[in-house]
Image 1: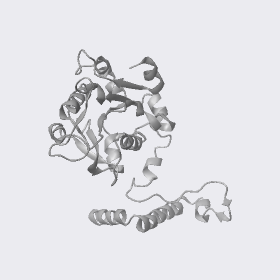
Image 2: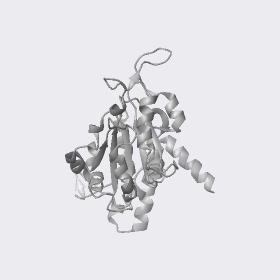
Image 3: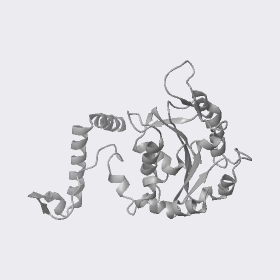
Image 4: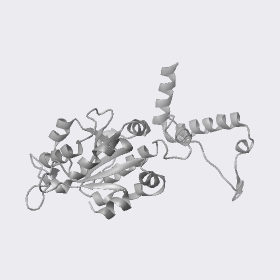
Length: 275
């Protein structure tokens, strides 16, 4: 890790040393700082991709302020042979390449040092298109932990034995395939970090937005009062907070029914179960 990288990005880039790939000094130094902030360790072939957009706006400010911290672990550092190979051909044949279990296993062993063994306190995630769909409730769960480790896959994926051995939780950003897990990791981290105490100026914002209560968010308006012949709904200008809340609830329900019938049905099932 260069001092310039650490200072400019507020992150620690962890690479395996030639002397000991399993005990890099950077991780040992960071052991005492784990409790100071919500922390994420990302195993990736492209550590330079981070923090990316996470270094901007509110998440970037929170990173600089020490509310959360980011450690990147370069998977290539654990590669085998002269060319630091991290993958091999699929057993049984087929297209593409698969990340080797010994290489990924060594990286995970390093990433696991100094963090809680309890996965409820420190989840271990593999960004995978076959994983459980990521949603707001999952982001809320992650935000309540001490931190997490994220494994960004590439090529045709990761050897299944690594997933089984470490009991890795597979999570998907959606029903589509990306070239790697880095973009998915950044999206999930953005959704999680913004829920950490002190990141958003108004804590109520996270309670009223889409998906927080199982419904899509109501329409939003601001000045000017009239634009292109379209006016802000009178109810929002009435100053009657009770009626405004009821209108927003009604609009949220209407939008959810129209645009996300799947979410609407889940909402109805939840309402029925609570009666």
